[in-house]
Image (cartoon, rainbow, N blue to C red; front, side, top):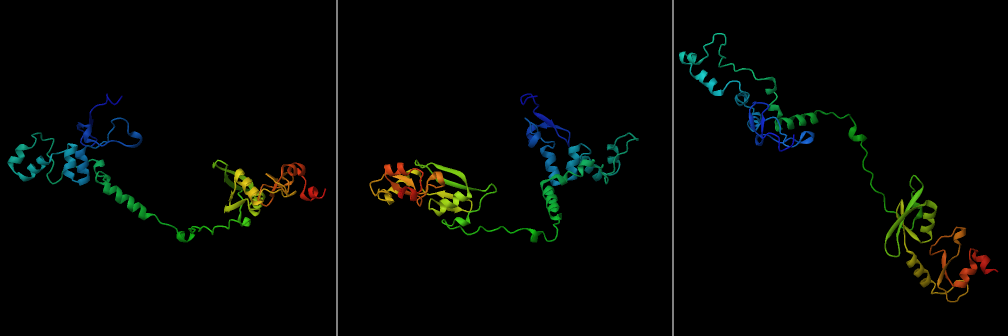
Length: 270
């Protein structure tokens, strides 16, 4: 049944009267489909929150309050004439109204105040074992920030790696994981700094590093003393050298090509 075909009225679960849907509250959760409403109408909800028994009895259609008051206020023959003439169905006593149904006893307890009181009592009723506060570990404060040049403060991950980050020539950020030994070498040879115990930061991009070495050596070849515009590794990369300020020097193109992967002593002593 679609929303357009659903009835515009609903039977109350308490007073069993057909009333418009505006008198009922919308359902929420999994049962909220289309024009679904809750079971109690507005009048029954007010009677339930107020906790008045006559209003509830009137809603259930048991005995009207006016009939009960008339029987109590008019004793004698006038009250007897108003009673039912059938001898087999005696009229109920004024002092003992008909007992409400079983679910009426729980109606006042369903109010918001009753729910809040029940939840509060349930929370207060929970008992914690002794020493629970003592067993709680206090939050560990962060340690002091390590020295940017202290490579001994690095702690690798469970894979034995250190995170290295930097930026490209165009300013784009990048990051990669390297082993602990390489991270220590880069920090000691002034190519990177320690950010935290698991991260280092590369100081120079490729373009910035080239300009740094050439300006530091004043565009002078480290081997022949002539004009140089290239960068050479003192310890060749093929033999474990890295691109760091301590391992790179300015060199001319001829010396750079001739030295190749030789050690400095081999190249200068030939």
